[in-house]
Length: 116
Image (cartoon, rainbow, N blue to C red; front, top):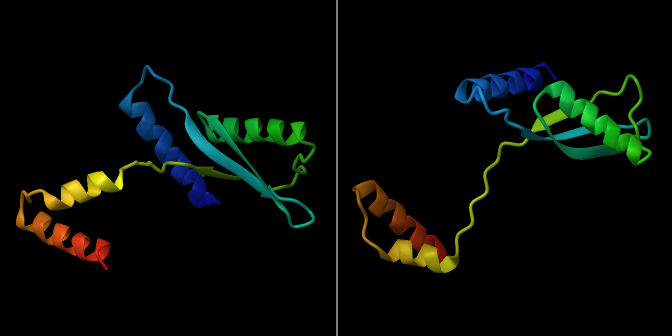
């Protein structure tokens, strides 16, 4: 849990230094395990660890599954990026020329993967 807090702190410091004027939100998944061993999770957008926890507790209460006072809330900061590309675009890129020997090798390897 200590590592998670450090991770959050580092993310917050990075965001603050990047743009002091804008208040950036982070998507977080907050979860806990109840006394029966069931994990409950909710996704929230928050500016801090405590805001994420408070928003999650409010949501859990709205759904009649509030954590107990001693429950450990896990806060996961979602930082994944999703890109979308069509197969046509991949084939087009693979058929195009390479800008470097490294890219040529990469394209050859990927062509082999697709045509297996």
